[in-house]
Image (tube, rainbow, N blue to C red; front, side, top):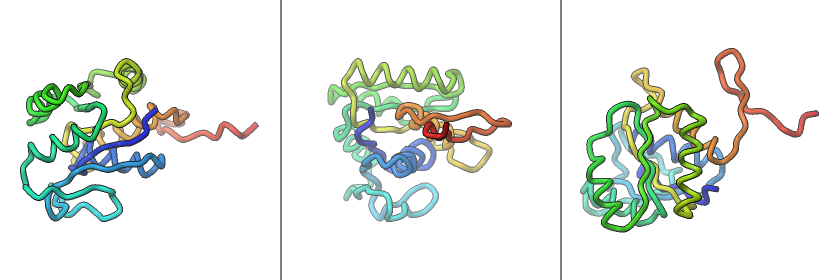
Length: 172
């Protein structure tokens, strides 16, 4: 089970991970750029992240990797720029890393892969990062990441006319 989500709040995977943490009431934290700067503006204050002094991409990544038990890189298609840096930093700090392409793995497969990885490496605190493409532009990465984290946490969903709705197991 996820005990804490680490994220820096960049658009796409990282902001989706923070939103999933809030929705599921999972503690979250992470490191963001100075002045809470993101690709789309300023990261709102309701996200529990700290600013780094140095505006270095690598410092932000490294702090988030260090503060986690392991890193999950979620992509939709190509690996994002910086993937090599994530791997090198994770390896350098002896932290497990899992890359999953949401374009080639089903939601169920992705959830299973991450759960197995978590069990194998005794992961409870995860740094989620990956593709930056956010909510707009026709990208589904934001919604997929929410669904993946809900799946890892065992939130049950029911398919209804192409939409997924949460179900209440207490209804008879």
